[in-house]
Length: 318
Picture (cartoon, rainbow, N blue to C red):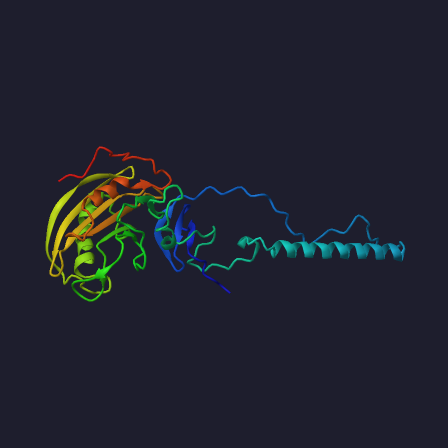
């Protein structure tokens, strides 16, 4: 009976030198360099075909007692080997490799142990610094500033932080948040220019936040105007990226600010990463300066002491 393996990192069938994320039903575009295996102590393997002891059974001659002893000895060794094999295969040490693994389907990964799912890991704090949010798929950590919280009761798995609490949307029925930060991997095209990606993403980011959301609601009754506030190159996690920031006004409510920022990931195949900022305008919205503060604090996972690195002299420009 064939079973589909659980979500996790597996060898990429199209590129065996890297690992690729399997979401439980299909391959995603997330890739990473395989981690070095941890050395393990060799285990004794069960023997199911023990050799007959040195006492040989002659084909002819010899006493009946000698033959009986040889047969009894061989049977005892065989029973001991079967018992030993059963203990090894059914030990209670919790090692899944000690039990028969399900046979993967034709499109499923064939090896490696699964890791925690992205949705479980994205909002977990760093072991070294609890004031950061970790995005393991894109290989970055983001600073958790005062006035921000890890996502709770959020359906979008790409959301990495929000302002605490919700309020009733001024447009269609529903609950809105004053601030949201989203991080995802660019999979829609093969574009590698951060500038082109940021400029191409900003319109969709604004529409999704303030015009019509994913469930076809209009929480602000749509956008009435869009204005470019800032754009330019920026250093992010030791990589040179690009950002575009708009001010949008809406039919209902004060509108807000939306920013799209693209940069290469520092892990795996260096896929492009897109970070979106959505801040409500007005007194209830988060400080606009938090966009720059969060951007400046983004670091590669495992290298939180890194400064701007490549392009560190580059900053937001008008």
